[in-house]
Length: 583
Image (cartoon, rainbow, N blue to C red; front, side, top):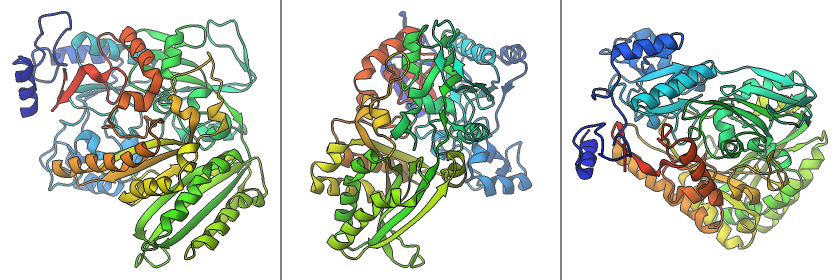
């Protein structure tokens, strides 16, 4: 707690939760052991009021530590074998998918220390909006840090925090279909077409499978564990977005619990500021989403292409060819190609059994509503031919596969999302001019960006995103998305329980991302897959929308009941060890 004591000394306070003598309220959020922390009797009464939904969580890794009450050699073996799978973390009330967001507090290794200090103190296993409301009201009344966890699939760590009360919405599931039309509550308007209302905890795999039964789908993410609540509030990119727009563009109505404890409906007719802000303004900020109504789309046929081209890592032309290929993405997107290409730099080659290092691109791309493989090959093969004739020394591979529906494609091509390690991500949105104006600049930027070993250059934007017409006229999606062609990401992993390694990873991620900031200084980044430590994050994640978002945040949450970072309105607080204190 040395950092906390130093912070409190600097601001002139000696005790957690001490009032600052003006109308700003307590200087810090309450923490266990402070005078303001609720008594066991108060917690017990609260638990009774929410149908016994309160959990005192035990970190899943504690079963491997003999000093912990949950220790079990047999359970430890099971946890260790599943630690790198998604299900262990998504089904646990507190475990994030990446270890660093719980500060490596209790890893499943008996040689390491274990404590619950990096996790929430209590969790509400919410299944109704009234459970959520009760949690919000309790946290506000007792000045407790409040967070929201869904599946824990969060690259910036908003769903985990020490000394907090967590609202776990993972079990707020269920899908209701609106077959022919949907009438937003309180509106004198009927929206024609198929739609669904889904609980905020519904995950992508669940949603896609339910829609496949009626030959429909939604604009959704590629990870199985991505849940609708966090996905949509951040904007939501998709392999279907270039045609249909982002996930937030499909939203017809939201139900949420506000920081003041109101259960509200937001749509184009009522609570319109929240309707605007919650569609792209970021999760865990303006309220806790409990359900969402989305337009669906007819499930398209999918022609999928797995492709790859590689060269020896020492080939001096490797990134000339890569830059040429990526520079053709605007044309590919315009022709109806979307997907998930990945650049890799000097990684062990599969064909050589890992004995040689290679550089190149691998990816899965699709075209919709076609069963003819030449439709997609005619877009890719001329580019390969140009590379082969201009920069000899590359090896090429393509494999086209037809799927009769989007659901069939997804079952074989979802992102398995490696988990259970320490990870920092950086990202940038790139428009067409950034990729095509200067081939040398594009080459140098991509080479620097991929210097961590690999980087994504996802084609998840296009005409559908650029010309989207969301209900109510607009939403809070980063305006840079309306010009984007490529969403690029790079990640750096690091050793657990190593502050030096963590600092180096944060710095390294910033260096990698800076290459693309220089290439596209007028663009931004996607908040759901980004760097928690992104400089100038307000403009990077929300552009010109930020002033309006901040105004709405201050209006609906004047006491900062909901706080996360990097999130709208977070400037007034700072994490200091296990406490959250005003700056």
